[in-house]
Length: 522
Image (cartoon, one colour):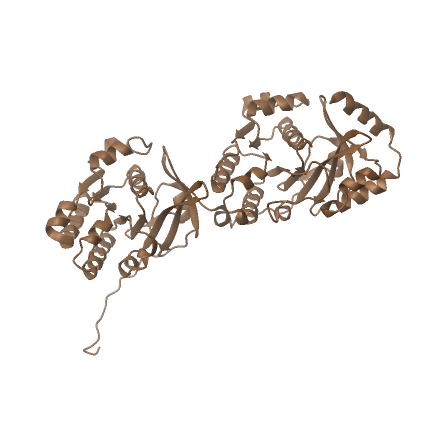
């Protein structure tokens, strides 16, 4: 070896890094398992973003898993005040404070002995307490009091090296954000997580963004963050969380509505593990048809979920009873779950998490989402909806759930259908269209199967009837030219052709009888 060469001994790294889970489910999903043991990370964000809560939550979760934590503060709120605020959060455990959870102030050391003294304090306290997680809250203060940029880099490098040797994971909290992470010293850590809060019109959106994470893949982009009584909750973006859903092969199983003629129109019922959209204007029978789909599954002993936005559980149970469907007994037994959330300012990924957690918890077989348009109202960035629903529906299919959505169309009459969620039809295998039409001064309820992917089906328009004894579907509807005008054009051209063909045939006796029943039943 020549004189100007230096030999560097490099020990072989372990074959697989050891993970340190944060205990925050959504965050561990974003980080694909948690932090790396012995690595250093910066958590950055403006005051009030939740950095201190997140760090404490990770710390107490780590202690619950058998770890030991040192939490060192530098010119932040006092420990008494911090603990007073943390007491309201469910993860806080006063019993471990001063033993497994050790709070210490480093400001006087920094002020008197500089960064070298603070680094010595960090090293000594990590060794003395045998810490497996070290948190420094107030990195910006250390940076401000550093005599030079080089000294600050040396401090970060020294702390990182010591943590690595002792297998202690380090979290550095700072209120600095924006472009500061591009500075050289920020490149020395193994990962950077940024917490933000943006105002979109009248709504605040808290987000978590992983800017850097060495040695592992992670979920990219901004993910929803909320601060609750349980601490920080992260809702990963559905489009990146559910990219590897295993979609099962087409199943021969059919799930029926229990409406003889409608099931015949569908070729025996809806194919299992598919998604079906019920399109129709207000009052066209979408909710009633969805309730009937659940009722037929409940009668067969299948676990069902009604995910609803516009009507309370009590009102839905009463509404079902009025058309001969008894849901109360199934709700009491636990076979039917009803989840109601008024369409307020919900986050899309919060809704997705809630929905998928419930279907997995109760092993749901049939799902009815009453009010797909409520998701559109909840969306701040509507251009993500097609990708969002592609991810959600794929995950539902992978769980072998047969799903029915209702989607309200804006016009009660008329043929043109404009969907605010672009591409929604492409991610649902089946489409059932419900329409209202006036014929001879009488309102008619019409139903047709617009689409059933990879399956033969009846494409003709039928009249259907909602009565106190239940829902029935009649024969092909015979009508005059007035109905053709209301259904012509746009995506309803197939239905219009079918009606035109049927219009030349006189109505049969069954249709006439059902028409009379509708008059009396409604």
